[in-house]
Length: 67
Image (cartoon, rainbow, N blue to C red):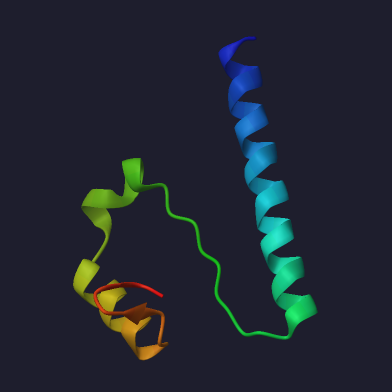
């Protein structure tokens, strides 16, 4: 398998997983948020203080971890 095919497969997997997550949230009626960060590219550009504060305000961080 070529590298291009491998990357394409990963992209398709991410799309399918995301679609399943969104469908499950819609079926359950439960509120939620889905976001994807490419940490390899974004790590040095993320304001972690803001990100943590935002997640805490939304009730998504509990006991120091995602909950």
